[in-house]
Length: 397
Ligand SMILES: [Zn+2]
Image (cartoon, rainbow, N blue to C red; front, side, top):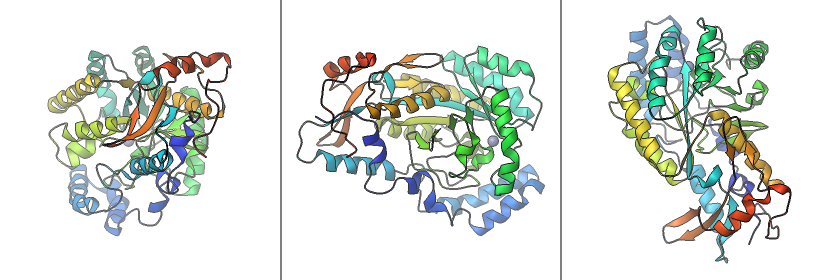
């Protein structure tokens, strides 16, 4: 049986996954001309006009063939196709380091971007709902868009939450040019350090894969897996974290609150639930972005409450802070190099890697999280530098 590895399930596709992960496919066709004009004029327009124009753009945005919305399966299918090839001629299955620690089936994180002073006032309402379900979240703040009293960070951290940076200003200028990016970088580095922040979320999810590692933080979370409605339409097509050089990317995998409720006129949690069910089925990361600026109506708070209840009722979910997921993903990637079984210490938990088995049955490729229980015990206890029982034969070859 092959040596377990996370790289085998991460890097081997029948095509170059970087074309999707880093949005190379979108390099030239990101914005249709009318949308470009809209985003140029937007700052000068009253909010009601902005919303009306964004709604008018919806049919055009929805007409994009790729990436499909709300689910773009190209990388999930690519992974299965790769495994199908690897499984030909073997009945044993392919062992791998499970995507998530402690034998979990999927992971979910809750993230918030605070857009304005109004959002500052809404923090406690969302926090209270999360605490009711025993959940914690990350809060991303713009450094110079509104005043941030010291007590806000302290209170959030005391509640088990994480602080991240949502750019310097919320004006969409960060990635407008290399000059603009360079002029923002020193401040970004300074605020990340002063705030002891590990993560970055770009204002309006503007992004450029090649530049992201220069943010110099543990993780970024600015790439949707698929989102035709953002100023930069497109997405990385991944429901798993991935690396941009040494930095972890945690893709946003559910439709944003503002997009769903305000632009698309949604009145239910249906798209969050149905997409989550798909992500869970494929063992991915559920990453929800909700803004305290837009969620403060009774209806929306009630829907948020209902969705959190749904998440906590799903079997086998690993709920963590984004920083913990990013740390885990980094450690998991090191297990390719002959160091399985190390325990992963994070701020709030000690996590154990476990083994899973990829195999094919009549329904297609499945990841069996319990098939290797015996071997798993050995794997879990091999943190003392022992080699695992099976001889090595790297899966990624
Ligand atoms: Zn924002």
